[in-house]
Amino acid sequence: MPHKTLSQKSSPFHKTSHYPKASLSKKPSAFHKASRSPKAPVSRKANALSAKPQTERFFLPMLLLLCAVTTLMQGVQSLAALPASCITGGCLILFALASAALLVFRSRRTLSEEHVVFFLLFCGMLLHCWYVLLSGLYDRQHDEGFYTGIASPQINPGHIGYIEYIYKFHKLPDINPYQYFSYYHPPLHYILSGLWLFFLTSLGMAEDLAFENLQILPLFYSGLLMLLTYRILKRINATGKGLYAGLLLVAIHPALTIMSGSVNNDMLSTLLLTAAILATLRWLQDKTCLNLLLIAISIGLGILCKINAAVIALPTGLVFLCDFLHELRTGNKPAIRRCLFRYFLFGCTAGTIGLSWIARNLLRFHVKPGISSATESSVMYTGNYGIWSRIGLPSLSDWHFVFPFHALSGEANHNIWVILFQTSLFAEEYPSDLTGLPLLFCQAAYPAAILFATACAALFLAAQCRKAKMAQKEIRKADAAKAGLEALYLSAGYLAFLFSFLLFALNYPFTCSSDFRYIAVCLVYNAIGLADGSRLYAAGTVQNAGARLARAGVCATLALMVIVYLTWRRW
Image (cartoon, rainbow, N blue to C red; front, side):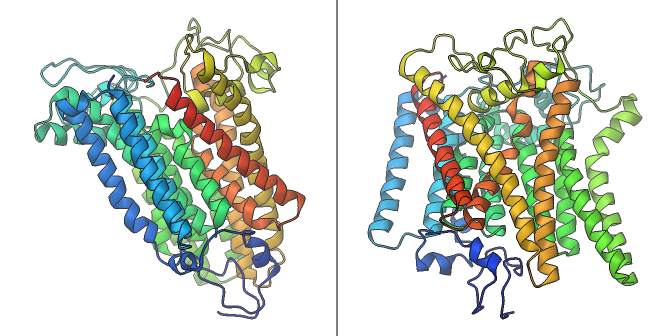
Protein backbone atom coordinates (compact mmCIF):
# COMPACT_ATOMS: atom_id res chain seq x y z
CA MET A 1 0.00 0.00 0.00
CA PRO A 2 1.21 3.60 -0.68
CA HIS A 3 2.20 5.20 1.87
CA LYS A 4 5.56 8.20 16.66
CA THR A 5 14.36 20.22 54.27
CA LEU A 6 16.67 21.04 53.71
CA SER A 7 18.97 18.95 55.99
CA GLN A 8 22.51 18.04 56.80
CA LYS A 9 22.20 14.83 54.86
CA SER A 10 19.78 14.76 51.99
CA SER A 11 18.07 11.71 50.60
CA PRO A 12 17.18 11.04 46.99
CA PHE A 13 13.82 9.77 48.17
CA HIS A 14 12.98 12.92 50.16
CA LYS A 15 11.42 14.45 47.09
CA THR A 16 7.81 14.67 46.18
CA SER A 17 8.23 16.81 43.10
CA HIS A 18 7.84 15.10 39.75
CA TYR A 19 11.02 16.73 38.52
CA PRO A 20 13.92 16.58 41.03
CA LYS A 21 15.19 19.96 42.17
CA ALA A 22 18.81 20.79 42.77
CA SER A 23 20.04 19.45 46.10
CA LEU A 24 20.22 22.06 48.88
CA SER A 25 22.31 19.99 51.29
CA LYS A 26 25.95 20.65 51.95
CA LYS A 27 26.73 17.04 52.72
CA PRO A 28 24.73 14.64 50.55
CA SER A 29 24.27 11.04 51.54
CA ALA A 30 26.21 8.17 50.04
CA PHE A 31 23.15 7.15 48.10
CA HIS A 32 22.79 10.61 46.62
CA LYS A 33 26.41 10.56 45.46
CA ALA A 34 25.93 7.24 43.78
CA SER A 35 22.72 8.46 42.21
CA ARG A 36 24.48 11.11 40.18
CA SER A 37 24.96 10.10 36.63
CA PRO A 38 28.68 10.17 35.81
CA LYS A 39 29.62 12.84 33.34
CA ALA A 40 26.02 13.55 32.38
CA PRO A 41 26.29 15.90 29.39
CA VAL A 42 23.67 18.36 30.57
CA SER A 43 24.17 22.12 30.69
CA ARG A 44 23.26 24.42 33.59
CA LYS A 45 20.27 25.50 31.64
CA ALA A 46 18.97 21.94 31.76
CA ASN A 47 19.11 21.95 35.55
CA ALA A 48 16.96 25.06 35.57
CA LEU A 49 14.53 23.55 33.12
CA SER A 50 14.30 20.25 34.98
CA ALA A 51 11.99 21.78 37.57
CA LYS A 52 9.42 22.55 34.87
CA PRO A 53 7.78 20.12 32.44
CA GLN A 54 8.98 22.01 29.36
CA THR A 55 9.18 18.80 27.35
CA GLU A 56 5.55 17.99 27.96
CA ARG A 57 4.46 21.53 27.03
CA PHE A 58 5.91 21.12 23.56
CA PHE A 59 5.56 17.37 23.07
CA LEU A 60 1.79 17.16 23.45
CA PRO A 61 1.05 19.73 20.69
CA MET A 62 3.64 18.01 18.50
CA LEU A 63 1.99 14.63 19.14
CA LEU A 64 -1.44 15.95 18.23
CA LEU A 65 -0.08 17.67 15.13
CA LEU A 66 1.69 14.55 13.84
CA CYS A 67 -1.41 12.43 14.45
CA ALA A 68 -3.60 15.01 12.68
CA VAL A 69 -1.26 15.13 9.69
CA THR A 70 -1.19 11.33 9.51
CA THR A 71 -4.98 11.25 9.65
CA LEU A 72 -5.22 13.66 6.73
CA MET A 73 -2.63 11.79 4.70
CA GLN A 74 -4.66 8.62 5.10
CA GLY A 75 -8.09 10.24 4.95
CA VAL A 76 -7.75 12.46 1.88
CA GLN A 77 -7.82 10.44 -1.31
CA SER A 78 -5.16 12.43 -3.16
CA LEU A 79 -2.74 12.32 -0.18
CA ALA A 80 -3.42 8.64 0.43
CA ALA A 81 -2.18 7.95 -3.09
CA LEU A 82 1.28 9.43 -2.46
CA PRO A 83 4.05 6.90 -3.21
CA ALA A 84 6.05 5.38 -0.36
CA SER A 85 9.23 7.10 -1.58
CA CYS A 86 7.67 10.55 -1.04
CA ILE A 87 6.58 9.66 2.50
CA THR A 88 9.98 8.19 3.39
CA GLY A 89 11.75 11.17 1.88
CA GLY A 90 9.60 13.64 3.80
CA CYS A 91 10.22 11.83 7.10
CA LEU A 92 13.98 11.76 6.46
CA ILE A 93 13.96 15.51 5.77
CA LEU A 94 12.14 16.17 9.07
CA PHE A 95 14.65 13.94 10.88
CA ALA A 96 17.55 15.81 9.27
CA LEU A 97 16.08 19.18 10.29
CA ALA A 98 15.62 18.00 13.89
CA SER A 99 19.19 16.65 13.97
CA ALA A 100 20.51 19.93 12.58
CA ALA A 101 18.66 21.88 15.28
CA LEU A 102 20.24 19.66 17.92
CA LEU A 103 23.70 20.29 16.46
CA VAL A 104 23.06 24.04 16.50
CA PHE A 105 22.16 23.95 20.20
CA ARG A 106 25.32 21.95 20.87
CA SER A 107 27.58 24.29 18.90
CA ARG A 108 26.18 27.25 20.85
CA ARG A 109 26.72 25.36 24.16
CA THR A 110 23.02 25.68 24.98
CA LEU A 111 22.15 21.99 24.53
CA SER A 112 20.05 20.87 27.50
CA GLU A 113 18.53 17.64 28.65
CA GLU A 114 15.14 18.96 27.57
CA HIS A 115 16.39 19.42 24.01
CA VAL A 116 17.73 15.88 23.80
CA VAL A 117 14.56 14.40 25.31
CA PHE A 118 12.32 16.29 22.91
CA PHE A 119 14.50 15.18 19.99
CA LEU A 120 14.18 11.52 21.02
CA LEU A 121 10.42 11.81 21.47
CA PHE A 122 10.05 13.54 18.13
CA CYS A 123 12.11 10.89 16.35
CA GLY A 124 10.07 8.14 17.97
CA MET A 125 6.79 9.65 16.84
CA LEU A 126 8.17 10.36 13.38
CA LEU A 127 9.17 6.70 13.03
CA HIS A 128 5.74 5.55 14.17
CA CYS A 129 3.95 7.92 11.80
CA TRP A 130 6.15 6.70 8.95
CA TYR A 131 5.29 3.09 9.76
CA VAL A 132 1.55 3.77 9.95
CA LEU A 133 1.54 5.64 6.65
CA LEU A 134 3.31 2.79 4.88
CA SER A 135 1.29 -0.02 6.48
CA GLY A 136 -2.25 -0.81 5.46
CA LEU A 137 -5.16 -1.76 7.68
CA TYR A 138 -4.50 -5.47 7.22
CA ASP A 139 -0.68 -5.42 7.35
CA ARG A 140 1.08 -7.17 10.27
CA GLN A 141 -2.13 -7.38 12.30
CA HIS A 142 -3.30 -10.12 14.68
CA ASP A 143 -6.76 -11.68 14.34
CA GLU A 144 -7.87 -8.55 12.54
CA GLY A 145 -10.92 -9.99 10.75
CA PHE A 146 -12.59 -7.70 8.24
CA TYR A 147 -15.41 -5.19 7.72
CA THR A 148 -18.23 -4.93 5.19
CA GLY A 149 -19.38 -1.37 5.90
CA ILE A 150 -22.31 0.33 7.52
CA ALA A 151 -24.60 -0.47 4.59
CA SER A 152 -24.34 -4.20 5.30
CA PRO A 153 -26.15 -5.79 8.29
CA GLN A 154 -23.51 -8.55 8.39
CA ILE A 155 -21.66 -9.12 11.70
CA ASN A 156 -17.97 -9.75 11.09
CA PRO A 157 -15.30 -11.45 13.22
CA GLY A 158 -11.95 -10.14 14.45
CA HIS A 159 -10.83 -6.87 15.97
CA ILE A 160 -11.99 -4.87 12.95
CA GLY A 161 -15.35 -6.64 12.99
CA TYR A 162 -15.75 -5.89 16.72
CA ILE A 163 -15.05 -2.20 16.09
CA GLU A 164 -17.39 -2.19 13.11
CA TYR A 165 -20.19 -3.69 15.22
CA ILE A 166 -20.07 -0.77 17.68
CA TYR A 167 -19.73 1.75 14.85
CA LYS A 168 -22.55 0.18 12.86
CA PHE A 169 -25.11 -0.67 15.56
CA HIS A 170 -24.15 1.99 18.17
CA LYS A 171 -24.07 -0.52 21.05
CA LEU A 172 -21.98 -3.25 22.61
CA PRO A 173 -22.28 -6.69 20.98
CA ASP A 174 -25.59 -8.17 22.10
CA ILE A 175 -24.35 -11.71 21.50
CA ASN A 176 -22.35 -14.37 23.30
CA PRO A 177 -18.78 -13.01 23.28
CA TYR A 178 -17.44 -16.36 22.10
CA GLN A 179 -19.74 -16.53 19.10
CA TYR A 180 -17.38 -14.41 17.01
CA PHE A 181 -13.61 -14.43 17.29
CA SER A 182 -12.06 -11.54 19.28
CA TYR A 183 -15.43 -10.48 20.76
CA TYR A 184 -14.39 -11.97 24.12
CA HIS A 185 -12.07 -8.99 24.68
CA PRO A 186 -13.27 -6.24 27.06
CA PRO A 187 -14.75 -3.34 25.09
CA LEU A 188 -12.78 -0.19 26.02
CA HIS A 189 -10.51 -0.09 22.98
CA TYR A 190 -13.34 -1.04 20.63
CA ILE A 191 -15.70 1.62 22.00
CA LEU A 192 -13.05 4.31 21.49
CA SER A 193 -12.30 3.04 17.99
CA GLY A 194 -15.99 2.87 17.09
CA LEU A 195 -16.48 6.47 18.26
CA TRP A 196 -13.41 7.48 16.24
CA LEU A 197 -14.92 5.91 13.11
CA PHE A 198 -18.22 7.67 13.72
CA PHE A 199 -16.40 11.00 14.16
CA LEU A 200 -14.40 10.63 10.95
CA THR A 201 -17.34 9.57 8.79
CA SER A 202 -19.50 12.36 10.25
CA LEU A 203 -16.89 14.81 8.94
CA GLY A 204 -17.42 13.40 5.47
CA MET A 205 -14.44 11.04 5.24
CA ALA A 206 -15.01 8.05 3.00
CA GLU A 207 -15.71 4.88 4.97
CA ASP A 208 -12.76 2.92 3.58
CA LEU A 209 -10.37 5.76 4.44
CA ALA A 210 -11.95 6.09 7.89
CA PHE A 211 -11.32 2.41 8.58
CA GLU A 212 -7.73 2.89 7.41
CA ASN A 213 -7.44 5.60 10.08
CA LEU A 214 -8.24 3.11 12.83
CA GLN A 215 -4.44 3.05 13.18
CA ILE A 216 -4.42 6.66 14.44
CA LEU A 217 -5.60 5.83 17.96
CA PRO A 218 -2.82 3.25 18.59
CA LEU A 219 -0.42 5.78 17.08
CA PHE A 220 -1.60 8.39 19.59
CA TYR A 221 -1.34 5.87 22.43
CA SER A 222 2.27 5.12 21.44
CA GLY A 223 3.14 8.80 21.82
CA LEU A 224 1.49 8.94 25.24
CA LEU A 225 3.45 5.82 26.20
CA MET A 226 6.70 7.64 25.44
CA LEU A 227 5.57 10.59 27.57
CA LEU A 228 4.58 8.39 30.52
CA THR A 229 7.89 6.55 30.28
CA TYR A 230 9.68 9.90 30.45
CA ARG A 231 7.65 10.80 33.55
CA ILE A 232 8.54 7.48 35.16
CA LEU A 233 12.25 7.95 34.45
CA LYS A 234 12.19 11.45 35.92
CA ARG A 235 10.25 10.12 38.90
CA ILE A 236 13.20 7.81 39.70
CA ASN A 237 15.62 10.76 39.19
CA ALA A 238 17.05 9.57 35.89
CA THR A 239 19.36 12.00 34.10
CA GLY A 240 21.86 12.05 31.27
CA LYS A 241 22.70 9.02 29.19
CA GLY A 242 20.68 6.64 31.34
CA LEU A 243 17.58 8.75 30.74
CA TYR A 244 18.27 8.99 27.03
CA ALA A 245 18.89 5.26 26.58
CA GLY A 246 15.76 4.29 28.50
CA LEU A 247 13.63 6.73 26.55
CA LEU A 248 15.14 5.66 23.22
CA LEU A 249 14.28 2.03 24.01
CA VAL A 250 10.58 2.85 24.22
CA ALA A 251 10.61 5.45 21.44
CA ILE A 252 11.98 3.32 18.60
CA HIS A 253 11.73 -0.31 19.71
CA PRO A 254 10.44 -2.27 16.70
CA ALA A 255 7.70 -4.07 18.65
CA LEU A 256 6.18 -0.77 19.81
CA THR A 257 6.58 0.64 16.32
CA ILE A 258 4.52 -2.20 14.89
CA MET A 259 2.00 -1.95 17.75
CA SER A 260 1.54 1.75 16.94
CA GLY A 261 -0.15 0.62 13.72
CA SER A 262 -2.06 -2.36 15.11
CA VAL A 263 -5.83 -2.05 15.35
CA ASN A 264 -6.12 -4.41 18.33
CA ASN A 265 -6.06 -3.51 22.03
CA ASP A 266 -2.36 -4.18 22.73
CA MET A 267 -1.10 -0.59 22.60
CA LEU A 268 -3.87 0.86 24.79
CA SER A 269 -3.38 -1.97 27.28
CA THR A 270 0.38 -1.27 27.44
CA LEU A 271 -0.31 2.45 27.89
CA LEU A 272 -2.71 1.86 30.80
CA LEU A 273 -0.27 -0.54 32.48
CA THR A 274 2.42 2.13 32.22
CA ALA A 275 0.00 4.67 33.68
CA ALA A 276 -0.59 2.30 36.61
CA ILE A 277 3.19 2.01 37.19
CA LEU A 278 3.59 5.79 37.17
CA ALA A 279 0.60 6.31 39.48
CA THR A 280 1.96 3.75 41.95
CA LEU A 281 5.41 5.37 41.99
CA ARG A 282 3.70 8.70 42.69
CA TRP A 283 1.69 7.13 45.53
CA LEU A 284 4.83 5.62 47.07
CA GLN A 285 6.25 9.15 47.34
CA ASP A 286 3.01 10.92 48.24
CA LYS A 287 0.31 8.66 49.71
CA THR A 288 -2.73 10.79 48.98
CA CYS A 289 -6.20 9.56 48.20
CA LEU A 290 -5.99 11.14 44.75
CA ASN A 291 -2.88 9.17 43.82
CA LEU A 292 -4.54 5.98 45.10
CA LEU A 293 -7.58 6.64 42.93
CA LEU A 294 -5.33 7.22 39.92
CA ILE A 295 -3.86 3.75 40.45
CA ALA A 296 -7.34 2.26 40.74
CA ILE A 297 -8.60 3.97 37.59
CA SER A 298 -5.51 2.96 35.60
CA ILE A 299 -5.79 -0.68 36.64
CA GLY A 300 -9.57 -0.73 36.19
CA LEU A 301 -9.39 0.72 32.69
CA GLY A 302 -6.48 -1.61 31.90
CA ILE A 303 -8.60 -4.66 32.74
CA LEU A 304 -11.51 -3.14 30.81
CA CYS A 305 -9.14 -3.01 27.84
CA LYS A 306 -7.49 -6.41 28.19
CA ILE A 307 -7.98 -8.93 31.00
CA ASN A 308 -4.28 -9.82 31.38
CA ALA A 309 -3.70 -6.23 32.56
CA ALA A 310 -4.87 -7.57 35.94
CA VAL A 311 -1.29 -8.84 36.44
CA ILE A 312 -0.25 -5.32 37.52
CA ALA A 313 -2.56 -5.70 40.54
CA LEU A 314 -0.17 -8.30 42.02
CA PRO A 315 2.83 -6.00 42.68
CA THR A 316 0.42 -3.18 43.57
CA GLY A 317 -1.31 -5.34 46.15
CA LEU A 318 2.09 -6.39 47.51
CA VAL A 319 3.18 -2.82 48.28
CA PHE A 320 -0.27 -2.07 49.71
CA LEU A 321 0.15 -5.05 52.04
CA CYS A 322 3.63 -3.91 53.12
CA ASP A 323 2.32 -0.41 53.77
CA PHE A 324 -0.61 -1.75 55.82
CA LEU A 325 1.68 -4.00 57.88
CA HIS A 326 3.85 -0.96 58.60
CA GLU A 327 0.80 0.94 59.88
CA LEU A 328 -0.15 -2.04 62.05
CA ARG A 329 3.31 -2.07 63.62
CA THR A 330 3.01 1.62 64.51
CA GLY A 331 -0.24 0.93 66.39
CA ASN A 332 -1.77 4.20 65.18
CA LYS A 333 -5.47 3.28 65.07
CA PRO A 334 -6.67 6.39 63.14
CA ALA A 335 -3.96 5.75 60.54
CA ILE A 336 -4.97 2.09 60.32
CA ARG A 337 -8.65 3.00 59.83
CA ARG A 338 -7.69 5.59 57.23
CA CYS A 339 -5.54 3.02 55.46
CA LEU A 340 -8.35 0.45 55.41
CA PHE A 341 -10.83 3.00 54.06
CA ARG A 342 -8.48 4.00 51.25
CA TYR A 343 -7.87 0.42 50.24
CA PHE A 344 -11.61 -0.24 50.31
CA LEU A 345 -12.09 2.77 48.05
CA PHE A 346 -9.35 1.47 45.78
CA GLY A 347 -10.93 -1.96 45.52
CA CYS A 348 -14.38 -0.56 44.80
CA THR A 349 -13.08 1.76 42.08
CA ALA A 350 -10.78 -0.69 40.33
CA GLY A 351 -13.19 -3.58 40.71
CA THR A 352 -16.26 -1.71 39.47
CA ILE A 353 -14.47 -0.54 36.35
CA GLY A 354 -12.35 -3.59 35.62
CA LEU A 355 -14.83 -6.34 36.40
CA SER A 356 -17.88 -4.74 34.75
CA TRP A 357 -17.38 -6.58 31.45
CA ILE A 358 -16.85 -9.93 33.18
CA ALA A 359 -19.95 -9.40 35.34
CA ARG A 360 -22.01 -8.45 32.27
CA ASN A 361 -21.10 -11.64 30.44
CA LEU A 362 -21.69 -13.80 33.52
CA LEU A 363 -25.15 -12.34 34.06
CA ARG A 364 -26.29 -12.13 30.45
CA PHE A 365 -24.62 -15.09 28.77
CA HIS A 366 -23.44 -17.25 31.71
CA VAL A 367 -19.88 -17.40 30.34
CA LYS A 368 -16.63 -17.04 32.28
CA PRO A 369 -13.69 -14.90 31.16
CA GLY A 370 -11.27 -16.60 28.82
CA ILE A 371 -10.10 -16.63 25.23
CA SER A 372 -11.02 -18.42 22.06
CA SER A 373 -8.10 -20.60 21.03
CA ALA A 374 -7.31 -22.86 18.11
CA THR A 375 -7.60 -26.62 18.29
CA GLU A 376 -4.90 -29.27 18.57
CA SER A 377 -5.09 -29.76 14.83
CA SER A 378 -3.74 -26.24 14.29
CA VAL A 379 -0.28 -25.92 12.76
CA MET A 380 0.54 -23.57 15.66
CA TYR A 381 -0.09 -26.22 18.34
CA THR A 382 2.91 -26.97 20.60
CA GLY A 383 1.27 -29.06 23.34
CA ASN A 384 2.77 -32.27 22.00
CA TYR A 385 6.28 -31.09 22.96
CA GLY A 386 7.79 -31.42 26.43
CA ILE A 387 7.65 -28.54 28.89
CA TRP A 388 11.43 -28.08 28.95
CA SER A 389 11.65 -27.92 25.17
CA ARG A 390 9.02 -25.19 25.28
CA ILE A 391 10.15 -23.04 28.23
CA GLY A 392 13.74 -24.18 28.80
CA LEU A 393 16.92 -22.82 27.27
CA PRO A 394 16.87 -23.58 23.55
CA SER A 395 19.73 -25.29 21.78
CA LEU A 396 21.91 -23.34 19.38
CA SER A 397 20.11 -24.71 16.34
CA ASP A 398 16.70 -23.82 17.79
CA TRP A 399 17.57 -20.11 17.75
CA HIS A 400 17.50 -20.03 13.92
CA PHE A 401 20.28 -17.44 13.65
CA VAL A 402 20.57 -17.96 9.87
CA PHE A 403 16.98 -16.92 9.21
CA PRO A 404 15.72 -15.25 12.41
CA PHE A 405 12.03 -14.97 11.59
CA HIS A 406 9.02 -16.59 13.21
CA ALA A 407 7.41 -19.41 11.30
CA LEU A 408 3.91 -19.97 12.66
CA SER A 409 4.39 -23.73 12.65
CA GLY A 410 4.95 -25.33 16.05
CA GLU A 411 7.05 -27.99 14.38
CA ALA A 412 9.46 -25.36 13.07
CA ASN A 413 9.63 -23.46 16.35
CA HIS A 414 8.04 -24.25 19.69
CA ASN A 415 10.38 -22.62 22.25
CA ILE A 416 8.73 -19.54 23.76
CA TRP A 417 12.01 -17.64 24.25
CA VAL A 418 12.95 -18.00 20.60
CA ILE A 419 9.49 -16.88 19.48
CA LEU A 420 9.60 -14.04 22.02
CA PHE A 421 12.80 -12.55 20.59
CA GLN A 422 11.83 -13.14 16.97
CA THR A 423 8.46 -11.42 17.34
CA SER A 424 9.99 -8.59 19.38
CA LEU A 425 11.96 -7.58 16.29
CA PHE A 426 9.98 -8.73 13.29
CA ALA A 427 6.46 -9.51 14.62
CA GLU A 428 5.14 -12.56 12.78
CA GLU A 429 6.73 -11.63 9.47
CA TYR A 430 8.36 -14.45 7.52
CA PRO A 431 9.98 -12.82 4.47
CA SER A 432 11.11 -15.92 2.61
CA ASP A 433 12.35 -13.79 -0.30
CA LEU A 434 14.57 -11.57 1.87
CA THR A 435 18.22 -11.69 0.80
CA GLY A 436 21.36 -9.57 0.62
CA LEU A 437 22.19 -6.68 2.91
CA PRO A 438 18.74 -6.40 4.58
CA LEU A 439 18.94 -10.07 5.63
CA LEU A 440 22.51 -9.51 6.89
CA PHE A 441 21.27 -6.63 9.06
CA CYS A 442 18.52 -8.87 10.47
CA GLN A 443 21.01 -11.63 11.18
CA ALA A 444 23.19 -9.12 13.08
CA ALA A 445 20.32 -7.48 15.01
CA TYR A 446 18.80 -10.76 16.22
CA PRO A 447 21.70 -12.11 18.37
CA ALA A 448 22.47 -8.56 19.52
CA ALA A 449 18.87 -8.19 20.71
CA ILE A 450 19.05 -11.51 22.59
CA LEU A 451 22.34 -10.55 24.26
CA PHE A 452 21.49 -6.99 25.27
CA ALA A 453 17.86 -7.69 26.21
CA THR A 454 19.12 -10.35 28.61
CA ALA A 455 21.71 -7.85 29.90
CA CYS A 456 18.94 -5.26 30.39
CA ALA A 457 16.85 -7.71 32.41
CA ALA A 458 19.83 -8.60 34.61
CA LEU A 459 20.75 -4.93 35.00
CA PHE A 460 17.20 -4.02 36.02
CA LEU A 461 17.00 -6.69 38.72
CA ALA A 462 20.54 -5.93 39.98
CA ALA A 463 19.76 -2.20 40.14
CA GLN A 464 16.60 -2.79 42.17
CA CYS A 465 18.55 -5.01 44.60
CA ARG A 466 21.20 -2.31 44.96
CA LYS A 467 18.53 0.34 45.45
CA ALA A 468 16.99 -1.70 48.28
CA LYS A 469 20.38 -2.29 49.94
CA MET A 470 21.39 1.37 49.70
CA ALA A 471 18.02 2.40 51.15
CA GLN A 472 18.82 0.45 54.32
CA LYS A 473 21.70 2.88 54.94
CA GLU A 474 19.42 5.89 54.80
CA ILE A 475 19.16 7.91 58.04
CA ARG A 476 15.53 8.83 57.48
CA LYS A 477 13.36 5.75 58.03
CA ALA A 478 10.57 7.17 55.87
CA ASP A 479 12.95 7.63 52.93
CA ALA A 480 14.33 4.13 53.36
CA ALA A 481 10.81 2.70 53.38
CA LYS A 482 9.90 4.54 50.18
CA ALA A 483 13.06 3.34 48.43
CA GLY A 484 12.56 -0.22 49.56
CA LEU A 485 8.94 -0.27 48.45
CA GLU A 486 9.87 1.22 45.10
CA ALA A 487 12.46 -1.49 44.47
CA LEU A 488 10.04 -4.17 45.64
CA TYR A 489 7.21 -2.86 43.47
CA LEU A 490 9.28 -2.61 40.31
CA SER A 491 11.06 -5.95 40.63
CA ALA A 492 7.87 -7.78 41.64
CA GLY A 493 6.01 -6.25 38.69
CA TYR A 494 8.67 -7.27 36.19
CA LEU A 495 8.80 -10.84 37.49
CA ALA A 496 5.00 -11.04 37.64
CA PHE A 497 4.68 -10.20 33.96
CA LEU A 498 7.36 -12.72 32.96
CA PHE A 499 5.81 -15.45 35.12
CA SER A 500 2.29 -14.76 33.83
CA PHE A 501 3.64 -14.90 30.28
CA LEU A 502 5.10 -18.36 30.96
CA LEU A 503 1.81 -19.57 32.43
CA PHE A 504 -0.16 -18.19 29.50
CA ALA A 505 2.11 -19.89 26.97
CA LEU A 506 1.80 -23.20 28.82
CA ASN A 507 -1.98 -23.01 29.29
CA TYR A 508 -2.53 -22.07 25.65
CA PRO A 509 0.12 -24.14 23.82
CA PHE A 510 0.23 -22.35 20.48
CA THR A 511 3.07 -20.40 18.91
CA CYS A 512 0.97 -17.25 18.81
CA SER A 513 0.75 -17.33 22.64
CA SER A 514 4.49 -16.54 22.86
CA ASP A 515 4.29 -13.26 20.96
CA PHE A 516 6.27 -10.42 22.55
CA ARG A 517 3.31 -8.04 22.35
CA TYR A 518 1.79 -9.70 25.43
CA ILE A 519 4.63 -8.40 27.62
CA ALA A 520 5.59 -5.25 25.73
CA VAL A 521 5.22 -3.34 29.02
CA CYS A 522 8.46 -5.04 30.13
CA LEU A 523 10.25 -2.52 27.90
CA VAL A 524 9.29 0.15 30.44
CA TYR A 525 10.96 -1.89 33.18
CA ASN A 526 14.06 -2.33 31.01
CA ALA A 527 14.12 1.42 30.43
CA ILE A 528 14.09 1.88 34.22
CA GLY A 529 16.95 -0.60 34.46
CA LEU A 530 19.05 1.35 31.96
CA ALA A 531 18.41 4.57 33.88
CA ASP A 532 18.99 3.09 37.35
CA GLY A 533 22.11 1.28 36.21
CA SER A 534 23.61 4.58 35.09
CA ARG A 535 22.94 6.46 38.34
CA LEU A 536 23.35 3.81 41.07
CA TYR A 537 26.82 2.56 40.18
CA ALA A 538 29.79 4.86 40.66
CA ALA A 539 32.08 5.59 37.74
CA GLY A 540 35.09 3.28 37.52
CA THR A 541 33.34 0.25 38.97
CA VAL A 542 32.79 -3.01 37.11
CA GLN A 543 29.03 -2.59 37.51
CA ASN A 544 29.11 0.86 35.95
CA ALA A 545 31.13 -0.47 33.03
CA GLY A 546 28.58 -3.25 32.56
CA ALA A 547 25.72 -0.75 32.64
CA ARG A 548 27.48 1.41 30.04
CA LEU A 549 28.04 -1.64 27.83
CA ALA A 550 24.39 -2.64 28.06
CA ARG A 551 23.33 0.92 27.28
CA ALA A 552 25.60 1.13 24.24
CA GLY A 553 24.50 -2.29 23.00
CA VAL A 554 20.81 -1.47 23.28
CA CYS A 555 21.25 1.81 21.39
CA ALA A 556 23.31 0.11 18.65
CA THR A 557 20.73 -2.67 18.24
CA LEU A 558 17.86 -0.18 18.04
CA ALA A 559 19.73 1.85 15.40
CA LEU A 560 20.37 -1.32 13.43
CA MET A 561 16.68 -2.23 13.52
CA VAL A 562 15.72 1.20 12.21
CA ILE A 563 18.07 0.58 9.29
CA VAL A 564 16.44 -2.82 8.77
CA TYR A 565 12.99 -1.29 8.59
CA LEU A 566 14.20 1.40 6.19
CA THR A 567 15.87 -1.04 3.80
CA TRP A 568 14.00 -4.30 3.65
CA ARG A 569 11.17 -2.84 1.54
CA ARG A 570 8.26 -4.85 2.88
CA TRP A 571 5.78 -1.99 3.24
